[in-house]
Image 1 (cartoon, rainbow, N blue to C red):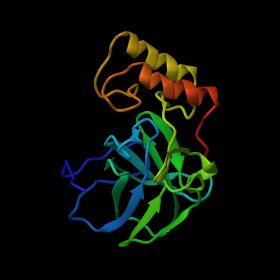
Image 2 (tube, one colour):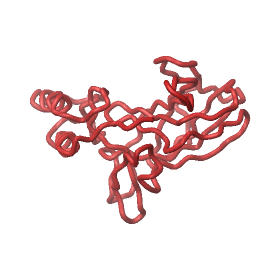
Image 3 (cartoon, one colour):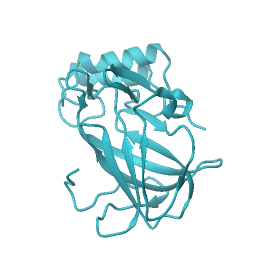
Image 4 (cartoon, rainbow, N blue to C red):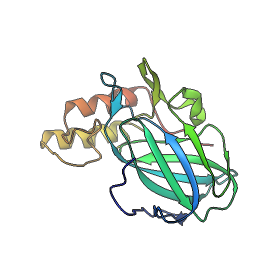
Length: 205
């Protein structure tokens, strides 16, 4: 992976982590795809930022560490956490217009090591099986797209935001751009409409 920045971070609670290649810590090699961003013709997806949280393994599952990284076109993201305390954590991943998705189980993290977690091989890799199959060859599962307002549910509220931006011919880096082509239009609305019709929402412990 090529880092485009020396470091970057988003703070939304929990211990703020910075991607600094000079520091030691724990690295998780994530593999994840997003429904709207995935292209089954070339088996790749649009590159975009994700926020990765390590959450306590017991209720209320507080955010202990978090960091942001670029999710690459092949679904990979080596996310670095510094000064981490060894223990068991759920991995929770958020994205600008997709459902928050959690690892199926809490995982053992050890400071100074690198391990892998792949969300894409089966729906059972996400908590509650909350993934959709987006490709049969290779077999790939992806997080649901369309949660524009990030309230954990894909519904008419998300569809309305997409429709409004599409009506105004809005372009750019926007939550309503579900397929990552920098244009909000009917192609984006399809994802929210389909997932809203099926009452798709986030599933957490």
